[in-house]
Image (tube, rainbow, N blue to C red; front, side, top):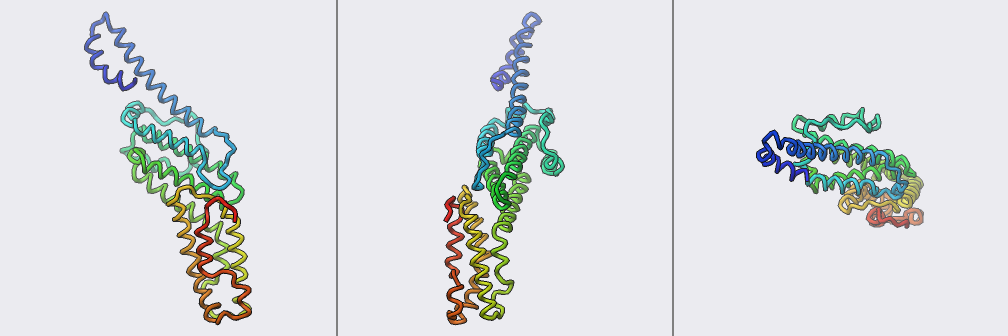
Length: 302
C-alpha cells in the first residue's frame, strides 16, 4: 500500500492541485506518513520481542535455536523490500527504546559496521541482528557446560551468516559485516575445540616420536584412551545441523588429533613389534580415532 500511494502521489498532486481539493491531497500524504510510522513501530516491536524472548528451549544439544531461525526467516523476507524500507527509514535514527546489554553496546561491533555508505535501513537491520546475538549470548549461559555453550554460539552465528550470504541481506549489511562475523564463527569453533578436546590433545606428547620406556608409553596410551572416550561420550550427543559446518569442525579436529596419535602409535607400538606388555593398553588404532571423530554431532550418545 505504501508503494501504491507513493507511485500515485504525483498524479494526486496534479489532479487535486486546487485549494478546494487540497484536503484529499493531505489525506494521501497523511496515509503515507501513517504507514511509515506503522512500519517503524513494527521494527521496534520486533526488536522488543527478540530481547524479551523467554522460551526455555535452550538447545540442549547445541543446535540452532528456534528464535534464530524465526528471526532470520523474517529478516531475509524484509530484505526483499529493501528499496521501500530504505525510504521509510531515511533520516530516522536507530531506536534506543530497547537498549541492548552493556557488553554489546561497549563493543565496537555496531559502530564499526556503520560506514558512510550505510543507510538508516541497513543500520536498523544490523541492530536487529545484534539484538538477536545479544539474546543468543544470554541463552548460551544456560548450556550445561562451557564447550556446549561455544558450540551453541557457533551454530547460531553460522546460521545467521549463512542466511545473510544466501539473501539480499548480504547487500544490505555489506562485506565487512560478513567477514567480521565469519571470523567470529571461527573463534567460537576454536573455543569449542579447546574446551571440548583440549584434554585429549594434552594427553599426547609434544614430540610423539621421542624415546619412551614401555612404562612411559603405557601411561601415555592409557591417558589418551581415557580422555578420548570421555570427550566422545560428552560430545557425541551434540549436534551441528549445517552439514558443511559439521564437516569443517570434524576435519579440524582430525587434523589436530589423528596425525599426532598416528606418529605415537607407529613409534611406540608398531615399531616396538606390538610389544606384549603394550597390547592391552593400546585400545585404538589411528583409524579408530578417525572414525570416532567422523561419527560426532549426530545427536546420538554412543
